Structures are given as structure tokens and as C-alpha cells.
Image (cartoon, rainbow, N blue to C red; front, side, top):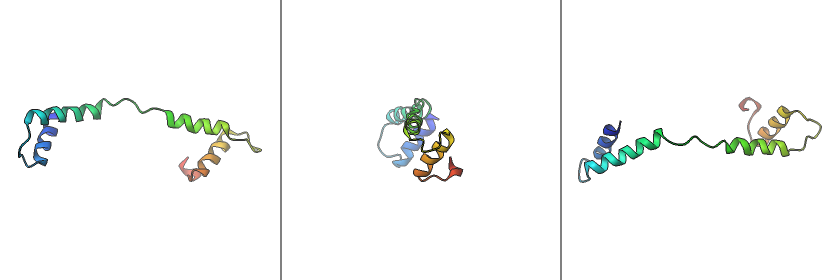
Length: 81
């Protein structure tokens, strides 16, 4: 994969100039970024659940009803939830 990525880097510049070692090292870095990125933080879900917890119940104490209400306010249809 690294060899192919390095080749395509050289190809993009028309095989003019550049350094094969630099192409290789930059391709190696790109590949490692693709495969070794840390897991995404669940922060978005936590913020959403925090908003649900802070919602007034307004006659409905059902968590699913509160989730649907917040989702609807965000512009999502019930089918998207």
C-alpha cells in the first residue's frame, strides 16, 4: 500500500522533481493515519444524552418520548431516530 501511495504521489506531479524517499515517507505517514487513528470520542452522544436529561418532562416521563422530541427539534423525522 505504501509503495502504491508513493507511486501515485510521484505520478500526480508528472514524475518531475521530488524525491522517491520523501514520497515513500509521506505515503507511509498517510497510510498510518488511515489505519491507526484513535477511536472517535463518544462526546457527541454524551452531549445529546445530557440534553435529554435536562429536558423538562412536560407530562411525559418516557425517555423515548423525550428523545423523539429532541430529535424532532433538531429536524430529524421519527424514522431517522
